[in-house]
Length: 280
Figure (tube, rainbow, N blue to C red):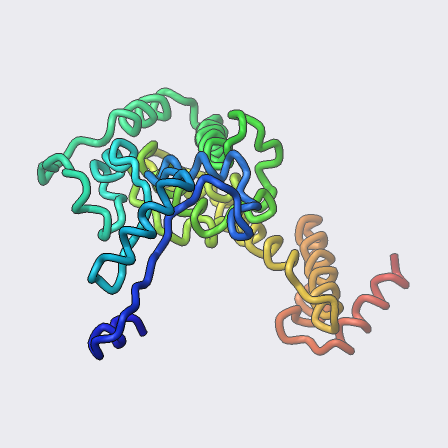
C-alpha cells in the first residue's frame, strides 16, 4: 500500500521494527531465554530513545520501506560462516571463503571421533546426550535438564524459530545437513537422536528405530486429537492392535482370530473386543 502511495506521489512509510527494550503488548511474554535466543540471532533490543530517533529519521526519509532495528554484526558472523544467515542480512557481514571440499567444523569432527570410540551399545545414548544438551541451550536451560527424552519438544515450548535453531545447532555439531522439518518429523529428543544416529557413519540404530519413530509421531498426534467420535475409534483400534501385538509376542497369532485392524468396521471391532473380554 505504501509503495502504491509513493507511486501516486502521496506520503507514507512502512517501518518493520526490530525489538524494543521496553516491554510492550507484543513482547511482554518474552522471557530471558527468548531474549537470549534473539540475541544469538543477531537482534539486539533498541533503547526507547534510539527507537524514537529512528522514527524521526524515517519521517524525513523518502524511501517507502525501512527496517529500524539494532543488529549485532559479531553475532551474525558465525551464521555467515556456516551458511545459515538469512539472505536479507548477508550484505551486512562478510562470510569467509569456503573451499569446494571444506573440512567439517571442529565441533563436528570432535563428535565424530567421540562416537567412533563409543561402543555400539552406547552410541544412541551418546547422540541423545548431544541432542538434549542443544535442546537445553536453545531453551536457555542448564545442560541435562531435559529429563524425559520421550516428551515432545512442542510440550517443552518449541516453536518454528527454536526448531530451526536446534536444527542448525545439531547440524554444526554433527556435520550433517538436517532438514528444516527435523522437529516436525521427529518430535522428541529420543526420536531426533535415533534419526541423527541413522545418518552418521557406523552401525546406526537397530531395526526398531523406525517403529519407535512412528510411535513418537503417533503419540504427538494423539495429544491434539479432538475429544469426539474420532477419539473413540482411535481408542478401539489401538486396543485391538495391542491385543494382536500381545498374541504375536506370545507366538500364538491366528490370522483368522480377529478382524483386520486397518479395514474393520466399528461394530466388528466392538464385537472382537467383547469376545476377548469374555474369554479373558
